[in-house]
Image (cartoon, rainbow, N blue to C red; front, side, top):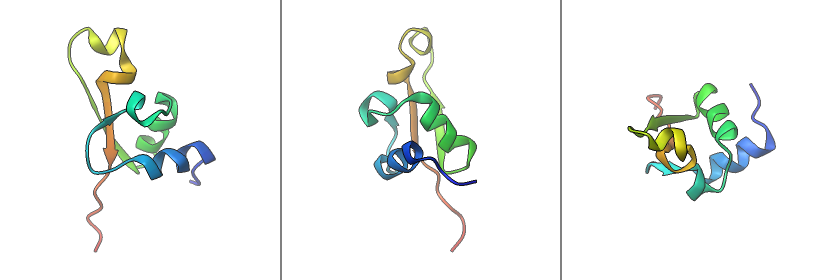
Length: 68
């Protein structure tokens, strides 16, 4: 599937370090789209923070490819 313009922009901002949507200045749906397409992976923080501040407790990074 082709990435949207917003997803392309977000992909360029992602690194191999965990980053939240707030730091990336991207929306959660945009980043979740990258996860669904296999470009990124996500890690959800624990506790009530996910419910009250998902933009800072859900983190994303580029998915490492095993293809050489």
